Every structure is written in structure tokens, then in C-alpha cells.
Image (cartoon, rainbow, N blue to C red; front, side, top):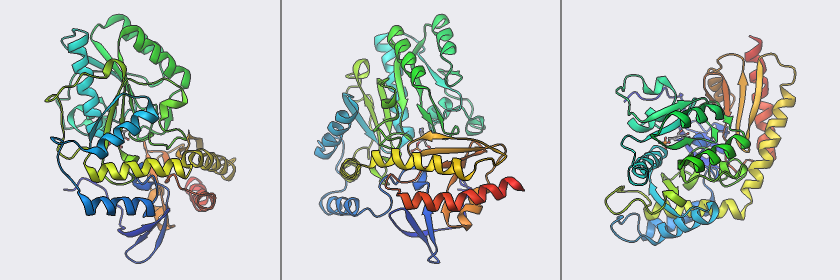
Length: 387
Ligand SMILES: Cc1ncc(COP(=O)(O)O)c(C=O)c1O
């Protein structure tokens, strides 16, 4: 189907932070398949782990025990402090599980007939009916009405708006947000806001749901974006970078959200199969053994500072922001055409929210990659803004 406005390029292979097209042209990948290729392309340990597992068994079924899935759940629990994990195959599925769980909690624990979830402006949670209803973008929703009910929207970062809902609604059971919004324009929630949100959730018996699909798995310099504030969620969703390119999703829960689902309440055929779990375990191992979270922090700062310097005094650059290797350069006008100009210059970048250049390089991005990206992209931004 004609579901994507695709760029006119096809890649045949990759190596580290580089991709190569059919004509042999080389590209510096500052997008990693939209925050997916955590370890870059062709990481030898990931290739070996996937090959080894493929030679053993790809898939069994969730009607049997899957030791690699148990190991991955324990590993996620260990790095997050969560208690239980459900595995699926994508971000939207992880969020569907979170939404279902919040409703289930509302019915079972709070005796609410029509549970509702507070969601944020600029949010993106996926494209299934429930997750596009939780998403803020009208374009994502248009044509798919009726939307799923049970979501109340508030401005991102506005704690008073949440308090007002708390004072007038008895149906709220959860608050769901990305602590660092990706599609919405690389917007970071203030740490104090998150801690107050956590306190409000505790006060009212609401679940705090953090969608870590884009900002999780080490990208911001910590395993999960919420760890910068210490505001631990009751439900955390993961996907994208968790298995560095092999499809996987996860919905991890703790405290009041744990122990709710019983056999028959939820499921997935492929979710957490041996291949995906082997890839995820290796991704997490390599993030640790190669200090990739330190690298994400360091290279992220290098990129933000480097772009700030290279674009100093340039009219039309309104902000350079983000955390770790989730970076936004906001311009004063729509800049979608920069994606094609960058592609022609051998750079893979993205523009979101119309006017925000989004950079999501692999966690292995090096100093020299950062230098090449700044030297390649800053002149394109200058040229674009001077026209
Ligand atoms: C924060 C967030 N949540 C959910 C999703 C949906 O993930 P998927 O495309 O794997 O369904 C995305 C995708 O961009 C995302 O950025």
C-alpha cells in the first residue's frame, strides 16, 4: 500500500554507523532506522548471537516456557526495578498492553466503570486504534473515527492541568506519557514535573505509564528516560532499540500494576520468541560492555555543543535540545526538504513536527562521526535558512 512517502534510496548493507546503497554510495546514519539500530549495523556480537540462535530454534510458542524470554525479563527487571514483563513485537503493541492493563486495573482495583487515562499534547503512542486515540496528532487520527474513548488530554508539562482533572474526575486510572517526546518534536519533560506527576499518581491511586519506546534502551544516557528524574513508573513500554533491529516490544510493570493479568487476559503469537530475546539480551549486554550509555551522553553533548557553535548567530535556528543521542534542532520554519538535501550529501536524518531536525544516531556513534555530521549538516541548515 502507498503508506509511506519513501525517499528514493535502497540500502544493500551497513557497517557500524554507515549504510551503503545499491550504487555503492556511502551514508552516515544519524537516524538508525528511527531509534532502532542501537548497536549500529552489523555489530559482530549481534550478528553472532542472531546466527547462533537461528541455528538452534527461531520460534516455539508462548504456550511453552521460553528460557531466553525469562532471562530477558529478569534482565529488564534488574535494570529498571520493574517486577514483571509482557513481550510483544512493536511499540504500539507494548502501549496497547499498557492501556489494557490500566483499564483492567481501573475495573478490578478502583471499581471504575469507564476508566480513563490522562495523555499529553504532542504525544505519539502508535497507530492501532487505541494508541492513535492516545496520540495527539490529528493527522494520525483523521479518517479513523470513531476514536477509542477513555483518554483525557492535557498540555505536556502542565501539572496544574493534571491537578484540575484530579479534582473533577473520578474515572482517571492512569497518566501516560513519553518523558522525552520524539515525534512531538524532541521535547523533554522537566524532572520536577515528573516527580510531581509521580506524587499525584500515588495520591490518587493512578498508574504512571512511561512510553519509553523511543527514548528507552540507553539512548538518553541512562537505561530509561525516567531514570533521570527518579520518577519510577508503574508501567513502562519498550520496543524500537531493544533488540537493535529485530522486532520486539515489552510492557514492564511493578507495584500496583503487577500480578493483574492472568492466563487468557492478553497474549501474542510472536511476542518474545527466542530469536528476538537473543537479540535483545545481546543488545543490553553490548550496551553495558562497551559503555554505550556513557558514549550516548558524551556524544550527545558533543553534538549539541558542536551544532550550537556551528550555527551560532544563524537566523532561524530557534533551539537545539534533547538528551543523550535524542537530539532536536528546531528551525523557525518547516524544513522537511532538508531530509532530501542531507540524503544527497550522504547523511541520514529526519524532520519531525514540521520544523524540528531529529537526530537519533546509534549508541556507537563516535567523535569522528559527530564531527562529520556537524560538518556535513550545519552548512545545509545555513544554506536552507539563507534562501
Ligand atoms: C514514543 C513512541 N511510542 C510508540 C511508538 C510506536 O511504535 P511502533 O511503530 O513500533 O508501533 C513510537 C514510534 O515511533 C514512538 O516513538
